[in-house]
Amino acid sequence: MDLTPDPLVVRLRKALRTGLAGVPARIELHGAPVADGPCGPARAVLDALGAAGFEQPASAGGLDLGLTAGVLVSEELGRAARGNSYRADAMAADMSGPAGAALAGLEALPVGSAVTATPRAGGWELTGTVTIDDVSAGTLLVATRTGGESVLVAAEREAVGCTTESGCWPPVARFEATPVTTADVVGTLDDSPTGPLARARLRQAAYLLGIADGAHRTAVEYAGLRQQFGTRLRDLPAVSFPLARALVALRATRAAVYRGAWSVDFEPDAVGTAPVMALAMAAETARDVVRLSMQSCGVRAMTSELGLHRHFRLAAAESARYGDPAALWRMVGADRVRSARRAAVGVTPPVAATTLE
Image 1 (cartoon, rainbow, N blue to C red):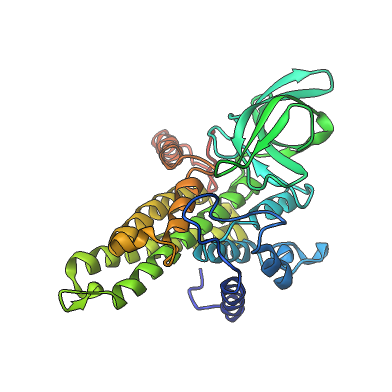
Image 2: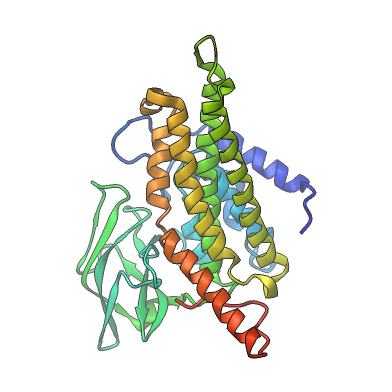
Protein backbone atom coordinates (compact mmCIF):
# COMPACT_ATOMS: atom_id res chain seq x y z
CA MET A 1 0.00 0.00 0.00
CA ASP A 2 1.43 3.36 -1.08
CA LEU A 3 1.22 5.79 1.86
CA THR A 4 2.22 8.78 -0.27
CA PRO A 5 -0.69 11.27 -0.47
CA ASP A 6 -2.47 10.99 -3.81
CA PRO A 7 -2.90 14.49 -5.32
CA LEU A 8 -6.27 13.48 -6.77
CA VAL A 9 -7.51 12.26 -3.39
CA VAL A 10 -6.31 15.46 -1.74
CA ARG A 11 -8.18 17.60 -4.26
CA LEU A 12 -11.29 15.47 -3.99
CA ARG A 13 -11.28 15.70 -0.21
CA LYS A 14 -10.88 19.48 -0.38
CA ALA A 15 -13.75 19.81 -2.85
CA LEU A 16 -16.03 17.65 -0.71
CA ARG A 17 -15.13 19.48 2.48
CA THR A 18 -15.70 22.88 0.86
CA GLY A 19 -19.02 21.87 -0.65
CA LEU A 20 -20.37 20.24 2.52
CA ALA A 21 -19.34 23.25 4.61
CA GLY A 22 -21.90 25.28 2.66
CA VAL A 23 -24.77 22.88 3.33
CA PRO A 24 -27.10 24.23 6.03
CA ALA A 25 -27.21 21.96 9.07
CA ARG A 26 -30.15 21.13 11.27
CA ILE A 27 -29.34 22.72 14.62
CA GLU A 28 -32.39 21.48 16.51
CA LEU A 29 -31.61 19.38 19.55
CA HIS A 30 -34.58 17.09 18.93
CA GLY A 31 -35.87 15.31 15.87
CA ALA A 32 -33.93 13.90 12.93
CA PRO A 33 -30.40 15.40 12.83
CA VAL A 34 -29.96 14.79 9.09
CA ALA A 35 -31.89 14.07 5.92
CA ASP A 36 -30.80 11.29 3.55
CA GLY A 37 -31.68 10.28 0.04
CA PRO A 38 -32.39 12.34 -3.07
CA CYS A 39 -34.09 15.03 -0.97
CA GLY A 40 -31.19 15.41 1.42
CA PRO A 41 -29.32 18.73 1.35
CA ALA A 42 -25.94 17.02 0.89
CA ARG A 43 -27.11 15.33 -2.30
CA ALA A 44 -26.68 18.54 -4.32
CA VAL A 45 -22.97 18.62 -3.44
CA LEU A 46 -22.48 15.00 -4.50
CA ASP A 47 -24.35 15.55 -7.75
CA ALA A 48 -22.30 18.66 -8.55
CA LEU A 49 -19.08 16.65 -8.11
CA GLY A 50 -20.41 13.66 -10.05
CA ALA A 51 -19.89 11.35 -7.07
CA ALA A 52 -22.18 8.69 -8.54
CA GLY A 53 -19.49 7.89 -11.12
CA PHE A 54 -16.45 7.82 -8.83
CA GLU A 55 -16.43 4.05 -8.33
CA GLN A 56 -17.97 3.03 -11.62
CA PRO A 57 -15.68 1.54 -14.28
CA ALA A 58 -14.80 3.55 -17.35
CA SER A 59 -16.72 1.07 -19.50
CA ALA A 60 -19.89 2.12 -17.67
CA GLY A 61 -19.17 5.83 -18.06
CA GLY A 62 -17.61 6.24 -14.62
CA LEU A 63 -14.27 7.59 -13.47
CA ASP A 64 -12.98 4.21 -12.23
CA LEU A 65 -11.49 5.69 -9.04
CA GLY A 66 -12.18 2.54 -7.06
CA LEU A 67 -13.63 1.92 -3.64
CA THR A 68 -11.07 4.29 -2.08
CA ALA A 69 -12.97 7.23 -3.59
CA GLY A 70 -16.27 5.92 -2.23
CA VAL A 71 -14.74 5.51 1.21
CA LEU A 72 -13.48 9.09 1.03
CA VAL A 73 -16.95 10.42 0.15
CA SER A 74 -18.53 8.55 3.06
CA GLU A 75 -15.88 9.77 5.49
CA GLU A 76 -16.39 13.42 4.56
CA LEU A 77 -20.17 13.07 4.87
CA GLY A 78 -19.70 11.73 8.37
CA ARG A 79 -17.18 14.38 9.30
CA ALA A 80 -19.67 17.10 8.34
CA ALA A 81 -22.43 15.24 10.26
CA ARG A 82 -24.57 14.98 7.14
CA GLY A 83 -26.72 12.07 6.04
CA ASN A 84 -25.04 9.37 3.99
CA SER A 85 -26.95 9.80 0.77
CA TYR A 86 -24.10 8.11 -1.11
CA ARG A 87 -24.17 4.55 0.21
CA ALA A 88 -27.54 3.47 -1.22
CA ASP A 89 -26.78 4.43 -4.82
CA ALA A 90 -23.26 3.02 -4.55
CA MET A 91 -24.52 -0.36 -3.37
CA ALA A 92 -27.31 -0.36 -5.95
CA ALA A 93 -24.71 0.29 -8.67
CA ASP A 94 -22.56 -2.58 -7.37
CA MET A 95 -25.55 -4.91 -7.77
CA SER A 96 -26.93 -3.34 -10.98
CA GLY A 97 -30.00 -2.24 -9.04
CA PRO A 98 -32.25 0.81 -9.43
CA ALA A 99 -30.80 4.22 -8.61
CA GLY A 100 -32.54 6.47 -6.11
CA ALA A 101 -33.62 3.56 -3.90
CA ALA A 102 -33.26 3.37 -0.12
CA LEU A 103 -31.52 0.60 1.81
CA ALA A 104 -33.42 -1.31 4.49
CA GLY A 105 -32.78 -4.28 6.73
CA LEU A 106 -28.98 -4.46 6.65
CA GLU A 107 -28.57 -3.93 10.40
CA ALA A 108 -29.30 -7.53 11.44
CA LEU A 109 -26.89 -10.46 11.54
CA PRO A 110 -27.09 -12.85 9.82
CA VAL A 111 -27.65 -10.31 7.08
CA GLY A 112 -31.31 -10.05 6.16
CA SER A 113 -32.64 -11.93 9.19
CA ALA A 114 -34.75 -8.96 10.35
CA VAL A 115 -37.18 -9.45 7.45
CA THR A 116 -38.82 -12.85 7.03
CA ALA A 117 -39.50 -13.99 3.47
CA THR A 118 -42.36 -16.52 3.41
CA PRO A 119 -42.64 -18.46 0.12
CA ARG A 120 -45.70 -17.88 -2.00
CA ALA A 121 -46.63 -18.56 -5.62
CA GLY A 122 -44.05 -16.80 -7.83
CA GLY A 123 -42.16 -15.17 -4.96
CA TRP A 124 -42.35 -14.33 -1.26
CA GLU A 125 -44.18 -12.28 1.33
CA LEU A 126 -42.00 -9.95 3.41
CA THR A 127 -42.70 -9.43 7.12
CA GLY A 128 -40.65 -7.42 9.60
CA THR A 129 -39.60 -3.97 10.81
CA VAL A 130 -36.26 -2.48 9.80
CA THR A 131 -34.46 0.84 9.66
CA ILE A 132 -34.47 2.74 6.39
CA ASP A 133 -32.32 5.50 4.91
CA ASP A 134 -34.99 7.65 3.29
CA VAL A 135 -38.78 7.43 3.71
CA SER A 136 -39.37 9.46 0.54
CA ALA A 137 -37.71 6.92 -1.76
CA GLY A 138 -40.09 5.20 -4.12
CA THR A 139 -38.18 1.90 -4.08
CA LEU A 140 -36.75 0.08 -1.07
CA LEU A 141 -33.83 -2.34 -1.39
CA VAL A 142 -34.65 -4.78 1.40
CA ALA A 143 -32.17 -7.29 2.77
CA THR A 144 -33.84 -10.63 3.53
CA ARG A 145 -33.09 -14.34 3.41
CA THR A 146 -34.49 -16.80 0.89
CA GLY A 147 -33.44 -20.41 0.74
CA GLY A 148 -30.81 -19.86 3.42
CA GLU A 149 -28.95 -17.10 1.58
CA SER A 150 -29.03 -13.32 1.95
CA VAL A 151 -30.52 -11.39 -0.95
CA LEU A 152 -31.46 -7.82 -1.76
CA VAL A 153 -35.05 -7.44 -2.96
CA ALA A 154 -36.61 -4.35 -4.53
CA ALA A 155 -39.97 -3.46 -2.97
CA GLU A 156 -42.12 -0.47 -3.83
CA ARG A 157 -42.84 1.88 -0.94
CA GLU A 158 -46.52 1.96 -1.95
CA ALA A 159 -46.78 -1.84 -2.11
CA VAL A 160 -49.45 -3.70 -0.17
CA GLY A 161 -48.51 -4.09 3.49
CA CYS A 162 -45.55 -1.69 3.33
CA THR A 163 -45.59 1.36 5.60
CA THR A 164 -42.91 3.81 6.65
CA GLU A 165 -42.60 5.89 9.80
CA SER A 166 -40.57 9.08 9.99
CA GLY A 167 -41.65 10.20 13.46
CA CYS A 168 -38.73 8.26 14.96
CA TRP A 169 -35.08 8.43 14.02
CA PRO A 170 -33.69 6.61 12.22
CA PRO A 171 -36.94 6.08 10.30
CA VAL A 172 -38.30 2.57 9.90
CA ALA A 173 -40.15 0.53 7.30
CA ARG A 174 -42.71 -2.09 8.25
CA PHE A 175 -43.72 -5.01 6.07
CA GLU A 176 -46.86 -7.05 6.67
CA ALA A 177 -47.09 -9.84 4.10
CA THR A 178 -45.76 -7.51 1.40
CA PRO A 179 -45.65 -9.49 -1.87
CA VAL A 180 -42.49 -9.58 -4.01
CA THR A 181 -41.67 -11.76 -7.00
CA THR A 182 -38.53 -13.55 -8.12
CA ALA A 183 -38.04 -10.74 -10.66
CA ASP A 184 -37.67 -8.29 -7.77
CA VAL A 185 -34.48 -9.96 -6.51
CA VAL A 186 -31.66 -7.51 -7.22
CA GLY A 187 -28.83 -9.84 -6.26
CA THR A 188 -27.23 -12.05 -3.65
CA LEU A 189 -25.42 -10.59 -0.64
CA ASP A 190 -22.79 -13.28 -0.49
CA ASP A 191 -19.64 -13.50 1.62
CA SER A 192 -17.28 -12.59 -1.19
CA PRO A 193 -14.38 -10.50 0.23
CA THR A 194 -14.78 -8.02 -2.61
CA GLY A 195 -18.54 -8.32 -3.14
CA PRO A 196 -21.21 -5.63 -2.69
CA LEU A 197 -21.70 -6.38 1.01
CA ALA A 198 -17.99 -6.10 1.79
CA ARG A 199 -17.76 -2.85 -0.15
CA ALA A 200 -20.84 -1.47 1.63
CA ARG A 201 -19.33 -2.32 5.00
CA LEU A 202 -16.17 -0.39 4.19
CA ARG A 203 -18.20 2.66 3.13
CA GLN A 204 -20.14 2.44 6.38
CA ALA A 205 -16.90 2.10 8.34
CA ALA A 206 -15.60 5.26 6.68
CA TYR A 207 -18.85 7.09 7.50
CA LEU A 208 -18.49 6.17 11.18
CA LEU A 209 -14.84 7.21 11.08
CA GLY A 210 -15.86 10.60 9.72
CA ILE A 211 -18.50 11.06 12.43
CA ALA A 212 -15.88 10.42 15.11
CA ASP A 213 -13.30 12.67 13.43
CA GLY A 214 -15.77 15.55 13.10
CA ALA A 215 -16.76 15.36 16.76
CA HIS A 216 -13.11 15.14 17.84
CA ARG A 217 -12.12 18.19 15.79
CA THR A 218 -14.99 20.18 17.29
CA ALA A 219 -13.95 19.21 20.81
CA VAL A 220 -10.30 20.08 20.19
CA GLU A 221 -11.21 23.49 18.78
CA TYR A 222 -13.54 24.27 21.68
CA ALA A 223 -11.00 23.07 24.26
CA GLY A 224 -8.46 25.41 22.70
CA LEU A 225 -10.74 28.42 23.14
CA ARG A 226 -12.47 27.74 26.45
CA GLN A 227 -10.49 28.72 29.53
CA GLN A 228 -10.76 27.39 33.04
CA PHE A 229 -8.61 28.26 36.06
CA GLY A 230 -6.71 30.75 33.91
CA THR A 231 -5.65 28.25 31.25
CA ARG A 232 -7.10 26.61 28.18
CA LEU A 233 -9.04 23.40 28.67
CA ARG A 234 -6.79 21.75 26.10
CA ASP A 235 -3.79 22.37 28.36
CA LEU A 236 -5.32 20.51 31.31
CA PRO A 237 -4.17 16.85 31.47
CA ALA A 238 -7.67 15.66 32.37
CA VAL A 239 -8.87 16.99 29.01
CA SER A 240 -5.83 16.77 26.75
CA PHE A 241 -4.84 13.16 27.54
CA PRO A 242 -8.22 11.61 26.62
CA LEU A 243 -8.33 13.73 23.45
CA ALA A 244 -4.83 12.50 22.55
CA ARG A 245 -5.85 8.86 23.08
CA ALA A 246 -8.89 9.47 20.89
CA LEU A 247 -6.62 10.78 18.14
CA VAL A 248 -4.61 7.55 18.27
CA ALA A 249 -7.83 5.53 17.96
CA LEU A 250 -8.92 7.63 14.99
CA ARG A 251 -5.64 7.11 13.17
CA ALA A 252 -5.67 3.38 13.80
CA THR A 253 -9.24 3.13 12.54
CA ARG A 254 -8.46 5.22 9.46
CA ALA A 255 -5.54 2.91 8.64
CA ALA A 256 -7.80 -0.14 8.91
CA VAL A 257 -10.54 1.39 6.75
CA TYR A 258 -8.30 2.62 3.96
CA ARG A 259 -6.19 -0.51 4.05
CA GLY A 260 -9.35 -2.53 3.48
CA ALA A 261 -10.46 -0.30 0.60
CA TRP A 262 -7.01 -0.43 -0.98
CA SER A 263 -7.00 -4.24 -0.72
CA VAL A 264 -10.38 -4.46 -2.46
CA ASP A 265 -9.09 -2.25 -5.27
CA PHE A 266 -5.62 -3.72 -5.76
CA GLU A 267 -5.20 -6.99 -3.79
CA PRO A 268 -8.59 -8.74 -3.82
CA ASP A 269 -7.03 -12.10 -2.95
CA ALA A 270 -5.77 -10.72 0.36
CA VAL A 271 -8.93 -8.97 1.60
CA GLY A 272 -10.08 -11.65 4.03
CA THR A 273 -12.07 -10.25 6.95
CA ALA A 274 -10.72 -6.70 6.57
CA PRO A 275 -14.15 -5.13 5.78
CA VAL A 276 -15.80 -6.76 8.79
CA MET A 277 -12.92 -5.84 11.10
CA ALA A 278 -12.83 -2.24 9.84
CA LEU A 279 -16.57 -1.82 10.40
CA ALA A 280 -16.44 -3.27 13.93
CA MET A 281 -13.48 -1.05 14.82
CA ALA A 282 -15.09 2.06 13.32
CA ALA A 283 -18.36 1.45 15.17
CA GLU A 284 -16.57 1.23 18.51
CA THR A 285 -14.36 4.23 17.72
CA ALA A 286 -17.34 6.38 16.74
CA ARG A 287 -19.25 5.72 19.93
CA ASP A 288 -16.24 6.13 22.22
CA VAL A 289 -14.73 9.20 20.58
CA VAL A 290 -18.03 11.06 20.24
CA ARG A 291 -18.87 10.40 23.88
CA LEU A 292 -15.41 11.55 24.97
CA SER A 293 -15.70 14.66 22.79
CA MET A 294 -18.96 15.60 24.45
CA GLN A 295 -17.46 15.07 27.89
CA SER A 296 -14.53 17.32 26.98
CA CYS A 297 -16.93 20.14 26.10
CA GLY A 298 -19.00 19.73 29.26
CA VAL A 299 -22.43 21.33 29.39
CA ARG A 300 -21.70 23.25 26.19
CA ALA A 301 -21.89 19.96 24.30
CA MET A 302 -25.64 19.87 24.93
CA THR A 303 -26.26 23.09 23.03
CA SER A 304 -26.86 23.53 19.31
CA GLU A 305 -23.89 25.84 18.68
CA LEU A 306 -21.26 23.13 18.62
CA GLY A 307 -23.44 20.62 16.79
CA LEU A 308 -22.09 17.69 18.78
CA HIS A 309 -25.59 16.40 19.39
CA ARG A 310 -25.82 15.51 15.70
CA HIS A 311 -22.58 13.52 15.85
CA PHE A 312 -23.82 11.80 19.00
CA ARG A 313 -27.15 10.73 17.51
CA LEU A 314 -25.53 9.69 14.25
CA ALA A 315 -22.94 7.55 16.04
CA ALA A 316 -25.62 5.88 18.15
CA ALA A 317 -27.79 4.97 15.16
CA GLU A 318 -25.16 4.27 12.53
CA SER A 319 -22.93 2.02 14.67
CA ALA A 320 -25.52 -0.77 14.42
CA ARG A 321 -25.91 -0.60 10.63
CA TYR A 322 -24.55 -3.67 8.81
CA GLY A 323 -24.24 -5.51 12.11
CA ASP A 324 -23.64 -5.03 15.81
CA PRO A 325 -19.90 -4.52 16.57
CA ALA A 326 -19.75 -7.44 19.01
CA ALA A 327 -21.28 -9.79 16.42
CA LEU A 328 -18.86 -8.53 13.78
CA TRP A 329 -15.89 -9.20 16.05
CA ARG A 330 -17.20 -12.73 16.63
CA MET A 331 -17.25 -13.25 12.88
CA VAL A 332 -13.60 -12.18 12.65
CA GLY A 333 -12.64 -14.44 15.56
CA ALA A 334 -14.51 -17.42 14.11
CA ASP A 335 -12.73 -16.99 10.80
CA ARG A 336 -9.34 -16.95 12.51
CA VAL A 337 -10.19 -20.07 14.52
CA ARG A 338 -11.14 -21.88 11.31
CA SER A 339 -7.89 -20.79 9.68
CA ALA A 340 -5.88 -21.99 12.68
CA ARG A 341 -7.61 -25.37 12.64
CA ARG A 342 -6.90 -25.81 8.95
CA ALA A 343 -3.26 -24.97 9.53
CA ALA A 344 -3.08 -27.46 12.41
CA VAL A 345 -4.19 -30.33 10.17
CA GLY A 346 -1.92 -29.26 7.36
CA VAL A 347 -4.58 -27.78 5.09
CA THR A 348 -3.59 -24.46 3.56
CA PRO A 349 -6.45 -21.99 4.10
CA PRO A 350 -7.51 -19.78 1.18
CA VAL A 351 -5.79 -16.42 1.05
CA ALA A 352 -9.05 -14.52 0.87
CA ALA A 353 -10.87 -16.22 3.70
CA THR A 354 -14.61 -15.57 3.77
CA THR A 355 -16.83 -14.96 6.76
CA LEU A 356 -19.82 -17.17 7.41
CA GLU A 357 -23.03 -15.50 8.48
